Length: 126
Image (tube, rainbow, N blue to C red; front, side):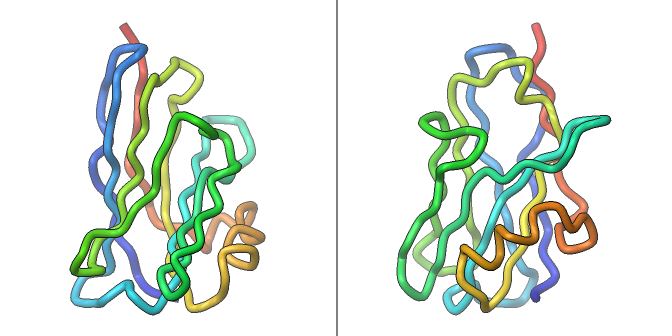
């Protein structure tokens, strides 16, 4: 598992968009899967999306299905989560993780809080 840093969160109005970033400082993400989860206060962590960079496979059947896109930049140093049509209920701490295991295994650790990064706060409010 790589140490990761999330960024890009903030305050956005309902219907707005945000792009979150996940990077492993000094590391290349080309050989790992990178997943995103979120956790709202008092709620269980939810899976959002995962990209398996070695194969290009994407699992985006999570909580933002149809409203998010996961991608990796050409240099394979940053994974992005583009989120659109945001709703107040999307307010949460968004975290990523990177590991050499496939997405199915990585996202199986959704409920293991210690596995995920410190996160970036997304607040959707008018």
